[in-house]
Length: 432
Image (cartoon, helix red, strand yellow):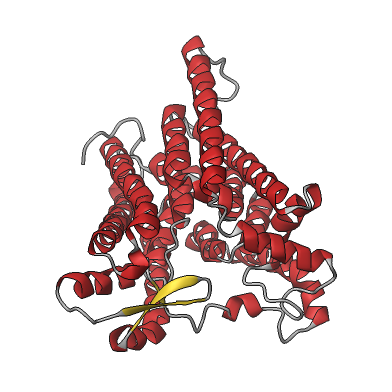
């Protein structure tokens, strides 16, 4: 059932489809880069340029310079700075590096699709949608790098190269901290089979990779080596987050004066008696992620899924669901998070045994993608920080769709871990 398709000869139609995809992708990249340059929407690249310059001038991150990301993120700032020392050149070098990683991510996603005998057409659609609807954020943010590392990690996992999978997820974590929540997901199949030895072994590999990257900063100043972990702890609730959108909606349409907006930690955040009371409690909501992981582990154990291939494929679905839950309860929901969701969503679609739910998830993701693009428009042109009601409504709708997608993904996880789903063939089921 899961024999790789890569050894099959591609038909003329498949070759034509691939050619069309590559042509459209290149065209989109050129247009997005041109629009970014014309509108000068380089955003965080200015900070990355300064960060790279500080390091190249001998400053040590965390102890001698402020740096909000894990250490490996510096690599993707320093490389473009070495290629082009002036700021304009840095913009284009960074954009090209981001595009290169995006292509690498799509390449590995196509390999995953071939491995599990899923049509490449869905990957093409999702990839072009990601480019179109996240547009400047692919160019001007660093989220594409850890996202691609997650994709490669899942590929290694499917190929039973578990050590490489856990190591790659650790590299993603040390680039941007969010992949750390996916390391427990990789452990689920081992824990479900009570394979404690390998679970400890692979968890140790992740910890070792992280530790090795941290060593220079631990030597320089142990007290600041993990500053990136505490950087956001005292921040307020970011204006685009799901919690903020509900308060902003009430402020705009029911309770004027409920919140105000201030700037801090590189973003606009809400303030006010209600918001300030909720913000310190937001970390408690993170428990929802761990409750979900424990729930899914118990379900898999009770379902006694013996097909290891099937079990490891579920890791993709569980990973995307975990990410969606994490974002739902987070204090921050920056617009570039759409890169994570849209690029990784094919993993959930390919893991589903139910064709109708694959189609539903694909359809709702299109609505989500459109609203994500409108979210950027609302922030920049409608004045979300000024609490413009139309802007507030757009962000509120985007977040409602996010919650709907999360609910659908949780339901799909429930479907896939029912005892009667064990022997279901992915091509056989079209309805529940």
